[in-house]
Image (cartoon, rainbow, N blue to C red):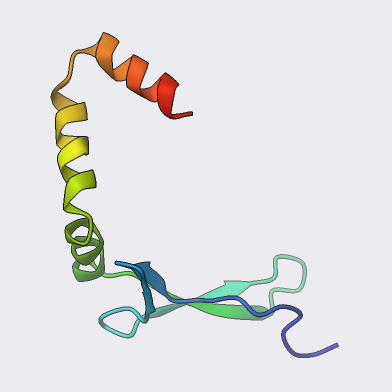
Length: 82
């Protein structure tokens, strides 16, 4: 059987939207059994990573507070988020 079995998005999900990599780069995904290329997915660049971080300033601020919090406070935060 040739062709896709299911349809999957293969781009980057940044700021609520699917997009291709900013430089158009892709990575081929291989079937480990046959070594056949089964998909190509977007390969994020540094610019894409920065765009993703900048897309969610409140989360970035929370992470900054988390990094500087005492260990006991960080462990409570991790337990409450699971």
